[in-house]
Figure 1 (cartoon, helix red, strand yellow):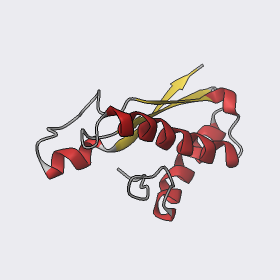
Figure 2 (figure 1 turned 30 degrees about the vertical axis):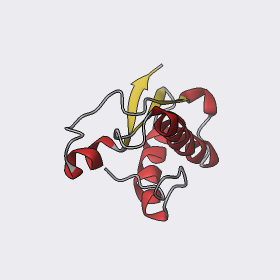
Figure 3 (figure 1 turned 45 degrees about the vertical axis):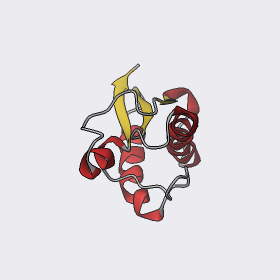
Length: 108
């Protein structure tokens, strides 16, 4: 809910940095943690656009974490486009909820 990108882009917006830095801090506190980063989109535009967009957005978060000193071996990133919706893609609110990056912490 706190990661934002330029529209139709994988460029992180500065208002995302605080939330991402909080995750970096958690990862630095416990070297046994790994992070799976998943990019998701709504159905607008279809897979031709959304597959690369979701992958690139997840990779942008991955790259940010690496730039802050997190070892790349502790991170993974993948894009799922619109294949895993969490809300109805028929409403504006639902589409907004489906456009997201999820980060899942786990132990080695």
